[in-house]
Structures are given as C-alpha cells and as structure tokens.
Image (cartoon, rainbow, N blue to C red; front, top):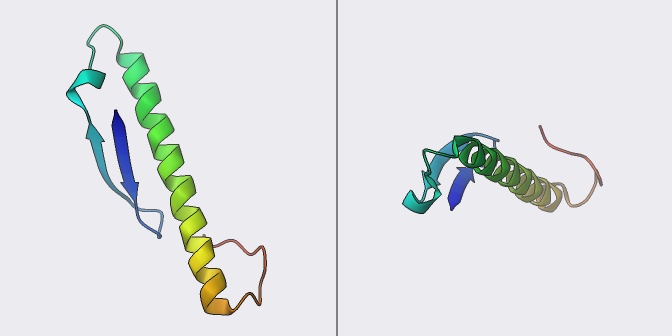
Length: 67
C-alpha cells in the first residue's frame, strides 16, 4: 500500500501511497506503514550498494559497509 524508492546513495526518491491506505480515522496506521516502507527501502538500498561495492573491490574488504 506504500511504496518507497531509495537510491544507492541513501537518498529518498519517491513515496507512493495507494488510495486505500488513506483512512482519515487512522492516520497513525498510515504513518507506521510509511515509516516501515522507508526503513525497508533504506535497508534494501544499503544491501545493493554493499553488493556492488564488493563486486568493484573484488572482495578485498569483506564486511565493509558503505555510508
């Protein structure tokens, strides 16, 4: 119901919210869904960034995280 797009530089690019997710009687649920979607997108972006870094570095620095 909430889609968040984050790039590999941890920049928030977009947020899309389906009409069905908007209930004026329960704004806190929508806030929780947005927060969860942002956290998931940030985590996925970090995973992809780290995987690409490992490819570029040839695995010379295993476990190193990009920030």
